[in-house]
Length: 390
Image 1 (tube, rainbow, N blue to C red):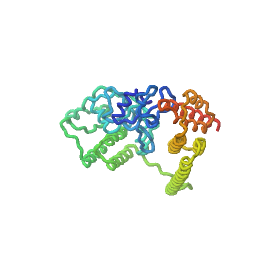
Image 2 (image 1 turned 90 degrees about the horizontal axis):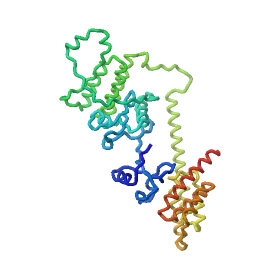
Image 3 (image 1 turned 135 degrees about the vertical axis):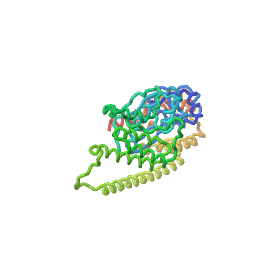
Image 4 (image 1 turned 90 degrees about the vertical axis):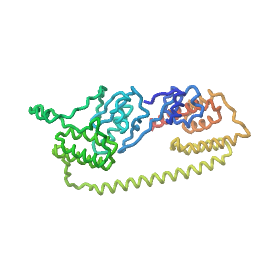
């Protein structure tokens, strides 16, 4: 849920480069872009604002862009995306591990987008994460694991203790420089993968090199293949590729060809639809410019019932301009707001509502946003009535 901002907070966020959205205060409708409101909306009462969440897409799954380091605040609730689960914690600027998570793009500000990001990453490698588990991360600083001496290793002669000993992932000492050479990193990670004797260690290790900022996609894919080979070596029954029995079904090549043909057909239909829209829009714009009466101009909206609001905007603007030209000799008489508001609330159909929306442009600029709020609300009611009826 978006955090509600005051006009002052929204203006400051806008100056900081954020994308701001607005709606009438208390309205049940979604927030809309600022270009739908006057420039003085920040100083006008009766409006509320929020920051527009920027989205991204990975493997066909959409989720919010990961948290940036300059947007993180101490004490802020954050969600870390890890291969096995989602870790919930509070941001602490002094915690370098949390900073690494953010810099590498594995932090979200809400649980839902964290789950979507984990699902997208898993899908990219052909895996499925149906219901990621959410855990609370321990905020206590972790102790650095010390390197065991040869004598300490020789003292571990009990089979039970040997079973409890986990494979150690090589970590750089405090005085050791961080390796940035991709070739050496691949060699280092390859050696570590070859040493693993447990499936869970291999699965957990993939996050280590995937989160490394010095490897390109090709290197990461190579290491992922090594992990898959290691999993096959450790548990052939679980990770052996399934051999499909021959059948009379279409081959993979044939299915791929059919998919390409279907995508091509969809693209051609979309282009044809765009051409039809552009042709009809050009005709309506020409008719709007030549309309001799307000009724003739507003009637053109009847051709746009199936259009989106973005598609209708050029025609609505053209009708506004023509109405202003027709009313130069006869100024539009400003009616009291309650009269037009009642007409909007009782509009029987979308065509009537479109005509009333055009009438809103003749009202005083200070009351136009409020009237547009009633127009949006009535359009929402009429569209859902039509959907229920169908």
